[in-house]
Image 1: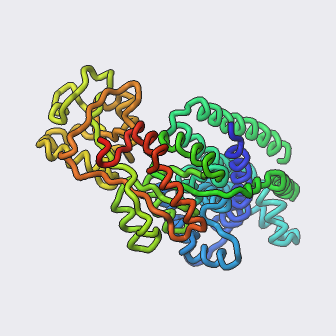
Image 2: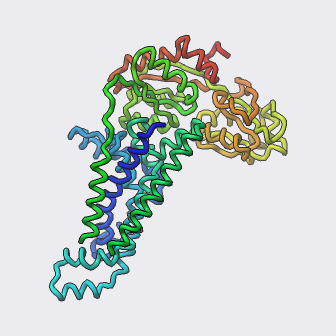
Image 3: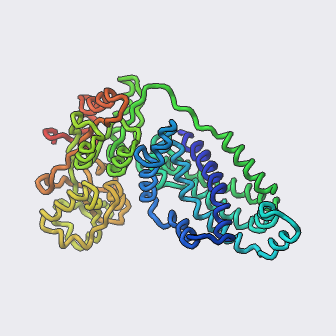
Length: 217
Length: 255
């Protein structure tokens, strides 16, 4: 049995989750705490990846990062191709999973009593320090839930990845794509084994993360 | 502070551990093909690899999706389309090399009956029988076999009667799965997919629908066009034809 899809999916989903955390948490914080023009619109727009059919979303993404797309052309000029590489799979997983983290983290930030932040402010803490020492720890449970959801969504992404990374065996064929291919070829044994790998990985990881996150806060 | 930092540290560590395996440095040819070629190509590809000492990367999917991907720079060397209009489009947009276009099969439609639904149907007209409650076809809006199925139903004069029973598969394989599962009692599907245990089938008269010409062409951006051509010649050569015929991919004159 080919283990490539398992290794690729592990890498892609971890990288996508990291990217989702780096972009999603600040965005969720801004949506929850800051007033800026277009905030309401942005708040609604970040949900759109959940609304559109994944393959359609994948097609739009392909139009943007493909060899003819505005972003794709810039990266091509830099000698880095995005579409139909593992990078596209990371971007696809990121796009599909970011709404889940943003919404969960936003709810977490909303639930933090602003008076606690004000209290920290009166004690001379900087805004940066308040975020790390007060807001983030108090919102952490919701954020953890969002990270877990985002990771699972990233690991399981099918439609966006299929369109923008292709299902190229040994290059971009992630675990869900490999499972689908085996089902299509009526190779149910391989499909079952890979499905089991996906589920067991997530279960083990979530138990581990659950302990880790609880220990921290 | 420590929680976030620790999370990031763990993620960074994981990313570092999981490097993408480097691509092998053997000569490779990327074959993109319609998903109904899965079984036939599983036999042809290893033979071609042995004969020419190259590695074939086989990417199967719906013709429409693969065409869009190739248009946007997917690394395909050769593209086996299930629908000639798609290749016409790609040729018009200079995505494939028109001179390399070759017919590799003419699709045939079969009338399939799920064994669980009773005796085998032998004529398209019989789809109006009350025991047939669902008829699976591929979506006529975009799938070539779906279009052929609609033409056949219209030509047999039963389109209006059968229409309320129709269930549309996303592609022809999906339509087959409806019948295989017994959810649809019958359907119109591809001969190349019909050889599964739980269904019975008969050929639908070719005069009932426009020919389903399936063509292949070399992609213009291919860096190894000669290998793509070699693969096409292999599929249409003696060894390839024998396998293709066995899976129902017949050329005019082979029926």
